[in-house]
Length: 453
Image (cartoon, rainbow, N blue to C red; front, top):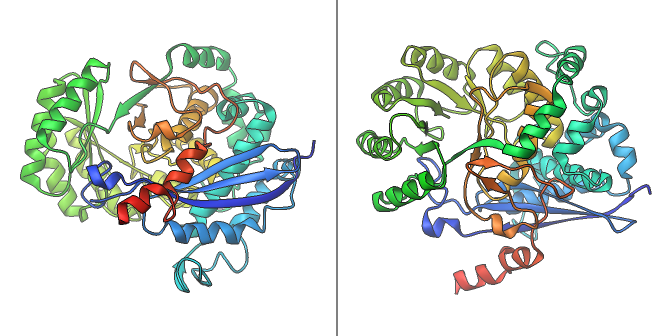
């Protein structure tokens, strides 16, 4: 079958996580985990599901951007897309008008005309592209009857490389180098796949120490996590130094000296402030400081990395890194010791593949950002492929896990002994329960009607 795409719909789906401070950090104090949820219909009845992640307000803007991109998708067949996936990716990211820095969208339904920051390959339009392409990849994996990670693992290296747009990154990674990396990873690939199927991919938890949680809740969650086998914990910091010292001391006492601790400032500080603040927390032996300053400040991250190296503290970032070009520069500048890809911030699987390959070339471990709503479901596929098909290493590698909202998915993540177990259902694990979509659709869903009444 050709699997011709006959329609594309998008819905604004929001979860009121701010009510209990889930997801709260120094910069995002009241997030409502949300998605622009995309469904692709085909002439043979097969559907593809995808989404892009937001924090509530503004999801309606991403919905408008998805609707603008939809015209480039509907009418094409799946075979037409995947046979020239690089070309299709560039079509979505290089529209001569939409890639400009800002566009006036006529969003009368939601916004009554509003100025929206767009591309090229960043901002709202890139989030929209990610949501649409996530649905395309889900459709492809379903058509092949495989989970996405297995679809990637089984691909020929040249086919994988053909999905990547190398424009702007050939000074860091060429097509030939990418093929060579993937060819070298063929050795031992089946053994690594078997290892993942048996033991899973190591994870760390962020669920214990959101900034808005009380000490009592923090202690209880740490106790429960330790009993469940967790050994790697991340703490939100950045609002108040004395409070950070107290909370980090509490967490370190709870988890003991041998377990791993990471800290995350969510872009709170200037460069000098970051160095000073993290130095004050060095006694608690954090493995990394995450997003210490503006996610766009490549040289600032490099300066922080250099200053904290003698303390044995690395720098991690990437969840708000716009595109492969920025990741290229972070790697070239030795500004990161841990690369954090995101399944919705970048332009879907295609662009994440480019970053995985660059990270491998620069010998920087990938530790994905997850959490949110559905991010764990998606990024598990990417990190499984990274280990099996690219890096062949678990050294200093782990994937974030947040224990929220998985019950709304038809194929939720499976965690066993603090490890992601490989998904078995065909697709990209994007499909949400229809009842959850309807109940949480904004603003018409029952959850939001009750909240406003």
